[in-house]
Length: 324
Image 1 (tube, rainbow, N blue to C red):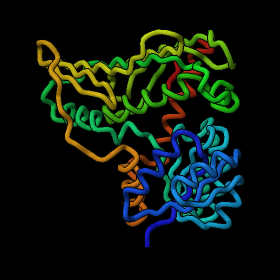
Image 2 (image 1 turned 45 degrees about the vertical axis):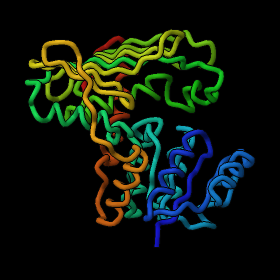
Image 3 (image 1 turned 180 degrees about the vertical axis):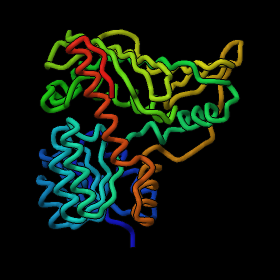
Image 4 (image 1 turned 30 degrees about the horizontal axis):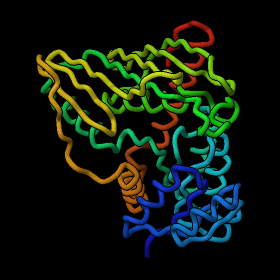
């Protein structure tokens, strides 16, 4: 029998979850919950499932095998703990939680219940990223020297829900939401955790109380330096990671393209075709459930991303370099 999956949260990301579930013979969608019931009902009608306003009622009534948590960040801890205590495996959207203490509470509940949890760090499951990591691991470009990651978009656009822009609900601004992707990408590509951090932020957003830009200088445990530069103000959109080695360079446009230079102009590299990132995440969780071990993206790894994010904010607030 397929594993029954319920999705908590009927926002934009819910479609990605339900589409991935529909493409797997090992899962079947059973229900969706959202505090705005009409939104849940609209999603439910699309996928032929049941709608709930209260996720607790959904879990108690439907008894799903897997719960996908696509709720605002400040609801992650309570929803994850409640689901785990009711025997549900977890597909938890990133960032894992608002802070390290909440991450610890989630991990404790997951371990106590004996369920499996995958935190959706999608960078691990995208074709261009996977190909870039293969090239780095092969050594064909020599020694890795440094990484520069740049991300720009209109973060304060009218369509962004207000909770994203309130620090007590989101955990932070562009660095909490998109910066965690960059931290994760750099750690995953290099197989090395962040060791020390310096940072600076600005707060010129036209609404909310979160930062609108940030620049981060970090060094990994391996000694590799990296910079992350992000702006949520008006300008040209950009999502590019430049990876510099002794024998060449990679230009990684995650989700779009990958380019390589061996001393001359960049040439495009075609990554191997793979399933969508959400399909691969669900496959990773399935293998973990069946083999009774952690998925490739472990709860402790996801916690480590929040450890690094908290260090970024401390560095920005104090002006003092932080060591992890």
